Length: 106
Image 1 (cartoon, rainbow, N blue to C red):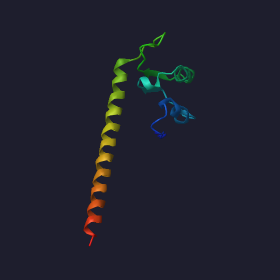
Image 2 (cartoon, rainbow, N blue to C red):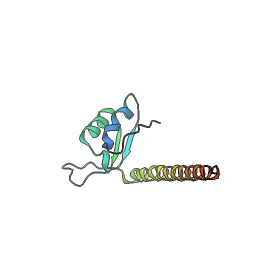
Image 3 (cartoon, rainbow, N blue to C red):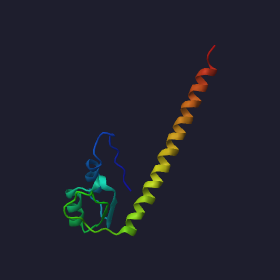
Image 4 (tube, helix red, strand yellow):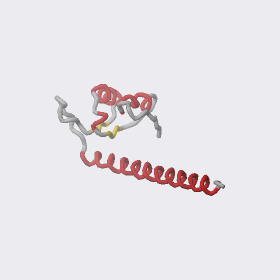
């Protein structure tokens, strides 16, 4: 498993190349943010199964396995829970720090 963090103002597709470089995989599951011709072409060259939700304006839609696409939701939900838990933990640490600072005031 690899992670490639990007600044929030960048397109998601910018982080794809470093993630897939040198990996052997059978499929890519992604949402519409990754519906880019170069990604699809590269996945086809690798022989990977493409399960990317298509943008409505795509001229030549690609058939995707809707059952497999449901797995993407499970993965996304997991990371959403992880991010919210990290946010809650960070918020608690900030509150504890504020409490410690206030307790040390004369």
